Amino acid sequence: MKSFVSQGRCIESIHYMVKMSENIEKMEAMVKAGEYFIVSRPRQFGKTTTLYSLAQVLSKEYIIINMDMIDLDHEAFSSGRAFSKAFCLQVMDHILERRESDLLLPDTVSDSIASIARGETTANLQQLFSLIRKWCRNSFKPVVLFIDEVDAAEGSDVFRDFLGKLRSAFIKRDPENMNITFQSVILAGVTDVEHLKSGIRPDDETRRRGSPWNIASNITIPMELPAKGVQQMLQEYKKDHGIRMNVKKVTDAIMKWTNGYPYLVSRICEILDTEMVPGRFKSLTKAWTTAGVDEAATKIVTEDSSLMSSLMGKINNDPALAQDLSDFLYKGKNISFSIDNERQRSFLLYGFARVSGARLMIANEIFRVRLCRKFDDDFHNKSPRDKAVWDAGEASKNKYVDPAGDLNVYRILEDFLSTFTRVRKISALPDEEAQENEFIEDVGCRQFLLYLTPIINGAGTYSIEEQTLDRRRMDVVIHYHGKRYILEIKIWHGAKYNSDGEEQLRGYLDYFNLNVGYMLTFSFNKHKKVGIDTHTIDGRILHEAIV
Image (cartoon, rainbow, N blue to C red):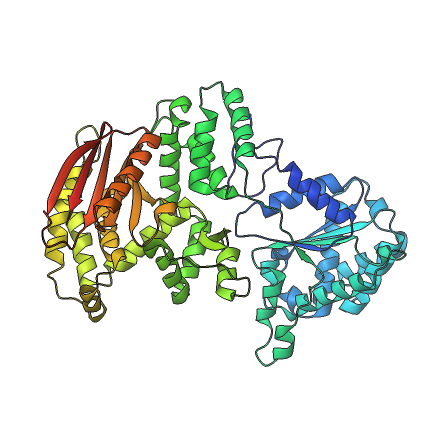
């Protein structure tokens, strides 16, 4: 029976996977047209799986050579001759894997490539490309070159020169001489080839600004997994295992957390299939629910995976990036996307962000929650006030869970009101004094989330509804032991705005089929009544805490 896999390449015969046939067909058409292109996507975005599937389709009409830069050692990038040897070694290794190896290389070429690979002779890059030209001219099929993990070559002058030779040969092609070089070259990695120039020697600014690869297309085919494809995959799984599953609801829940990020989709499915039964759920039918998806997503948020470690490492090494992401999360700051903004392009390359309606947005809800957790940790270690809020939540966390395992959000709000009032009297840091004079709306939101985080750590998490991220309101969904609690955090801006907020919250309660909702309102009205007011609206109970 098939399984889910979140690490490495997905193989259709043994793994459940979303079939991306349309993407493969579009790429196949690009190869047929003789295009050179770049598949530049964040880590674990299905690049290798896509290239493997494409190679399988192309192998009937083309000779496919796969070159993986991560397989090359440091010495391979030390000189053009060393790189030529490494290239020939990979060609020979690939050919020996094929049954009809004698048909893949013309006799006039095979001896030379084998000799270079064995180190019996050497060849600089110019000599290597002369050999490639002879190979392609005499090959019985057009040759397509795949180069995966180009990030491993970042900063290499030799690899840059290799790309320059590919570019030169590409430009010299014409309809009568298409076979003077590779039919198509496909590069894949996180770093697009434009960024490879950043590794050129600091004293060589002319070369730094130039690009050896301006003849290639940055592929615009979406590689996020579509909801329809995820649904078909889950239908196959449901049939194989003979379980009951509302495939549409489960798919919607997965997409809400992941936005189709391939690794995250696969990891959620992998957890539900292998890690939730019998520990958390009694059966696969019980696990494959929206509650199960929420628990799997919460588990991913807390995992020390290579993907999360890579993303957090980028933030730790770039304070400006950290500040921009914090503004995204807590202030709802709108950032218009500009293709010429290098930092914004980095957001996309590393997977933090996506573009929606010409605006930058956090890429998916799992990343949003993980980032919130990181910044919560950072904040509570920086400010006396934030630390006091965190410590208060940490000290009281055991009293907020009832015997049935449900979270007592009413009591959390009740205690937060007194904590917030007390904490505002603590001496402020200089930057916080300015905030006292003109209350910044994200401060109250952030401090409640700081209070909440240690309470639910280990058993739950929270997410922020993206469409409410503005300077007036933040809707938070608390996920705890498979249950949801909806909370709206806002500043008091008058009765009409408050009524609109209640309607918004009621809509969320309807969507999640919940009867109770919560509001936290920061009010500067001198006649306000501090405390919790409970009332009903259309049969739903709303607890509003006012501070």
